[in-house]
Image (tube, rainbow, N blue to C red; front, side, top):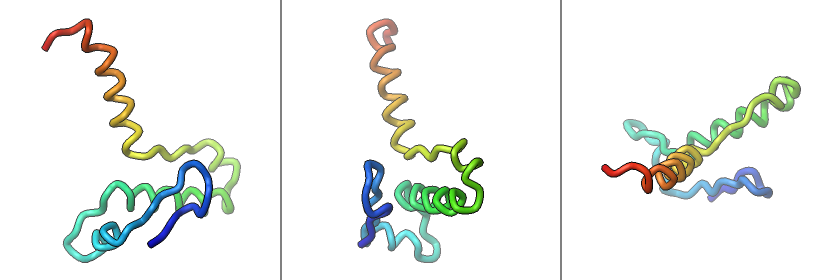
Length: 80
């Protein structure tokens, strides 16, 4: 339904199922939260470019991937 930003390496695809999460009594998902943060950062770049340069918005999947890589490194040394 929507691709934001329109081009670049960090595009988000907003699907119909994501839009359903905007209904009352529904929880936001990772995609919508990331979209909101990216939209806020784009607005901040126009309002206060110096401050915006100090901020980076990570995908919520970044931490999961980072945490998984740490676990892969630790597994050979630690037995559960």
